[in-house]
Length: 202
Ligand code: ATP
Image (tube, rainbow, N blue to C red; front, side, top):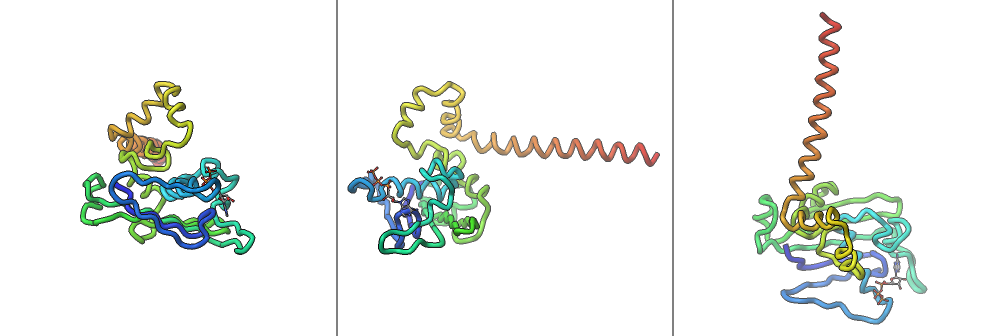
């Protein structure tokens, strides 16, 4: 999946709607200190499902909503959309018929949060699953911030294994295995309860 476009409205310093087009090749974002370069990366991380305000350099999640400036009032909502092209075919089968996939996240000041996939409301889980094994995602290796390379080099083998598993495409299966194991456990408990009831009735 290749990032095609990023649209930001009311997120951190981006009070007006802005749209970044990412064409083929390398895109560099340059500008003076404090102009919002890192906020662009924060927006990408956020729309992909980041749940930690700290990882977005804030204290609480509402800090991502434009908080006002000398000339502008604070906004009540932040919205970020990330558009991917599906040309390389490295997308889940159900998205192969679409020429692009749009992921949107919205947050209101009262804490209400909304996620959309191709403009249809969805769960955070749907977005996480979409990104699993693509290398893209809130915690994946597609975003390498300052200091991360050092962290990877110094990481314990088990921690480094996470990145290798993501690249090898097994993360999704490991996650589904966990869900299946939980269901098996719930079913086992239900069977035990049914066994008790049957024994009482006899
Ligand atoms: P540097 O080159 O120094 O790393 P940068 O270009 O990466 O800077 P950012 O860290 O992306 O800059 O942006 C910092 C700016 O974003 C600050 O001016 C800060 O006030 C502003 N900012 C962050 N959060 C909000 C918010 N919720 N509302 C309004 N402005 C915000």
